[in-house]
Length: 116
Image 1: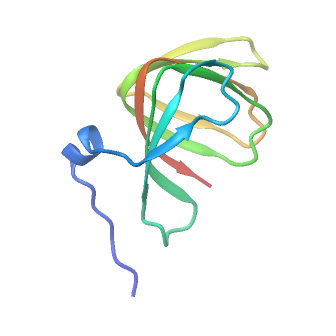
Image 2: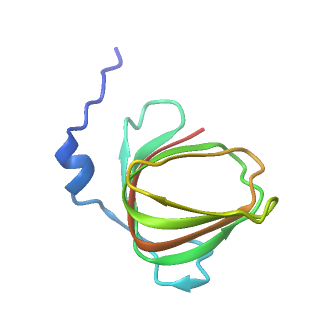
């Protein structure tokens, strides 16, 4: 029988995340990642993600990402509109299938994410 997953606030905000290396496709900075997978038997990919400053393009997303920024600062640029939007702790982002744009992390970002 499946069990629920509960992650306490302190672990979300301050827990050590396993190192996951350099962000694939990075073209600026040194965006080293930390990722903690949550509920590995659930559908989709769920977890806590942290990234040090740097930037990378996202080209034609193959899935949808729903994420909530816990801390840090970044700018997301939408290629379709050219709009660059700054995000920080407390912001919610939904990147749909087919989205093309760019992430530029200016202050280490920690987020909770679901990819499906």
